[in-house]
Length: 473
Image (cartoon, rainbow, N blue to C red; front, side, top):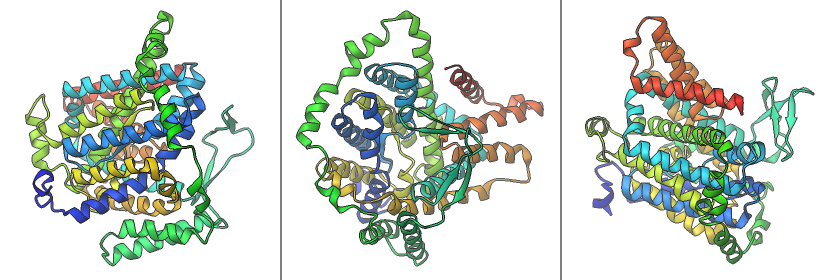
């Protein structure tokens, strides 16, 4: 194990990787329940999505750990599952089988652009200062996620400034005003308690501070009524879930999936636009996560980055292999019966706990597999217990802002928009888009078009096209 994962070489140990894996799992285990809740609205059986979510996470994360040897975990992504349900199925009128077929096609596209080295060329084309901006922006994104999940924020909307969809989802305008909650709920108070515990443990350099904070907060949440012990006996049976999975697995490739999707020539343009939106968001979410967490932590070393730049095609560097592992996940997930499987930004929680190798990913995969039978137990950990971990990890990642020359507006403006959009739009890819667009705009305005990398120009144009298509559909 030491030799396979190179633990000593990476400055870590079995115990540290174990703690990191457990930390990442608890930080992202909510997806086991949230993903079925969202996708089941389209008509996919809840039990099938439940198992598809877990199995997709197991397969993709295990491949990431064993093949790329990096501590990243994958699962069906938030945002992408909402796009699948509320836009592709509800708004555009595709069936869930056709939507799964689109996800499969998106996965194939991701594999092709990874094999062709286009994905890593995008990373190479991004200026160093934007790498730092993306890292800090993901810190804002993660911290904001923690504040939101912990129930510390509330939003006020005036009458007429929001719409309620048939599904019950509320879409508010920019008139919504964020504010701190008044701390009358047990959940928000528990988040504060957990945050205080985690901060004290970290300041005192207690080993495993983040996972200890999560577990301690969960225990405290029991007498506070936040942790519901009655859920231990609930839920569908595992046998029933496997029966439902059998009726969904492979549907994306069949008559109701791919064949139906391309049976009507009048829909080809709409299908193309939708797959394009899926693929663009998936690609840049992953790139942003790797850039934001890998460089600062040393997972992707300068030597590894140099190897990636020199190797051309192929998978010689860790980054090459990690990008390929991520690209495999989406197609596998679609065949199983779930939306885009992608690298989770919550992996940063495990990296913050010391995870540096694929052993941490293997631990996450094993815990996901066990959760098939222990899902109620994993479900006992409330969002308020993992929220403090995300906030603290966000604080750690924002430190990359120190390497940015904020007095140089040519650097500061793209960096600001990249990082702030990433957090406030709740999207890594939109933050990257903002940074790219302002970077190109400023270079063109200053007559420095020769400093623009062709790949970055192409990526920026694709983002702009995507926004135009979003406005059309």
